[in-house]
Image 1 (cartoon, helix red, strand yellow):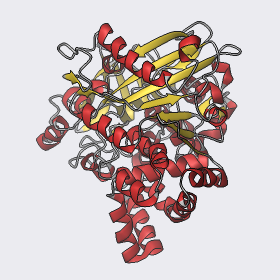
Image 2: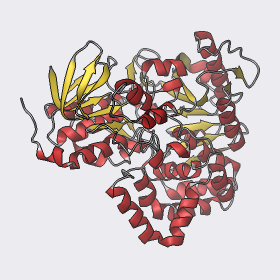
Image 3: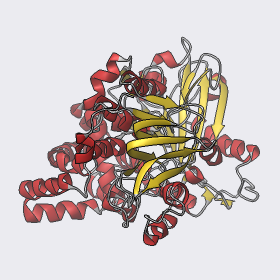
Image 4: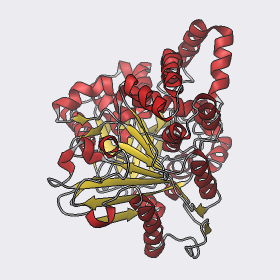
Length: 541
C-alpha cells in the first residue's frame, strides 16, 4: 500500500499549490488525479485548434495567481523550473457596436486620459477610485487572502477597525454589499467606461446587478490596474508542470488516472484514500480534497458517521451558477479590430458588448436558462502577450461566454431550437455561430483569416472536470450567501471539515473561484501550523 504524509485529491491550481507548499515544508506529498493529465481547469493542448497553435482550452489568465498570496512564496521555485510570465500594459478593453472603445492600462495617466476622452470627469473619478479603494486594498485583498474563521481573520478585522474607525468600517461593509451597477453608474458618467468595467463581475460568476458585485468589480479593476493580466509563456500547463516539479524535487509524487472514491476514516480522523481500482493510499498526517461539497460529503464521505446530518443537508443545498462556453479561433493573421485597432490589438482581453444593460440582460436570460440573444463576448488575445502560442504571423482568439445556461430551455432570440436542452454538437455549433457572427462586426478580418475553430459547451467542460457542475467554471454560485465565511456552506468552518485531518479546498471553498491558488495555500498554511504537523518529521521510508 502506497503512503504519504499528506494525500491530495485532485490536481487543480489549489491542489497543486497546496502540494508544493507542503512539499517545500518537508512533507512527503502524494497528488492523485482521476484524469490522464494534471491541472484541473488548466488544460493546454498543442496543435489546437489547428497545427502550430498552443491553446489553453479552459482557464487562461493568471492575474489572481501572480497577485495572490501563494505566488510570492513559490515565485523563485517556479522560475527555477522554467515558468515565465508575459504581460501587457493594456490588460482590458471594451468594444461597443457604435464603434466606441475604452481601455484600462497599468499606467494610471493613460487610463484617466482615455476615460476623460469619452466623458470629461471620468478620469478624475478613476484616480479617486485608485486613491480611495487602493488605500483600503490591504483590507479588501486581505479578506480574499485570509482564512477568515481563524486567528488571522480576527487580526484582519482588528486591523480594519483600527485603520478605518467604526464609521469607516461600517461604510466599507455597506459598500461591500453594493451592486456593480450602483457603483459604476454613481461613479462614471460614460456608458463606455461602464461597459469596460462591468463585464469583469462575470469572471467571478456574478452579474452587475447582484449584491456584492460592486466589491468584486473594484477588486478586479484594481488588480488589473496594478498587475495587468499575465499569462505563462507556452500555456498554463507550464505552471502546472513547475508546481509538479516542486513536489517531485522534494520527494513527492503525482499520479494521473487515479480516481479517489472514498476517504478512509479511523477513530474519527482521515487516514488515507481508496482508489477506484481498490488500492488504498495511506495518509500519515492529512488528506486534502479539491472537490465540490457534494462530491466530498455525499461521495467520498458517504456513510461516514463523523459527518453530521446538517452538514450533508447543507452540501445537498449547495448551488451552482451559470454555465460557460469556450470558443477557440485560429487565425492566419492577428485579429484586426474595426475601431481603435492599435490599442485593442495589445489588450489581453477585449469585452465585446452593447453596454451595461445588455450585459445585465444576457445574465438574466442565462439565469432563466435561455440562450442570450446578444451574449457578452470575452475576447482574449493570449498571443498578444505570448507570440510563442501561434505560428509566425498568425493570430488566435480565446473566447469565453460566461452567460451560457448549463441546460437551456429556450433561445431568447427565438432562432435556435434547443430541443430537450442537451448540448448536442448541432446546438453547440449553432450558438457558436451566433457568437462568431457578432464578433465579426468588430474584427474585420475574422471571416477571411479564420482557419479553424474549436467549441466547448457546458456539457463538455463538466465531462472533462466534474467540479464544473453544469459547466459552471466557478464550481458554485458566488452569491453572498455562498461567499466569504459562508463558502461553501454556513455549516462548515473554513477549510476544515468535521473529520479530523481532512481539509476541503478548491474553488468551492473560500476565497472562491479564479485561478489564484489561495484556497490551497491557506489550507496548507493552517495545516503546517497544527501541533501534530509540526511535531512529526518528514517520513522517508
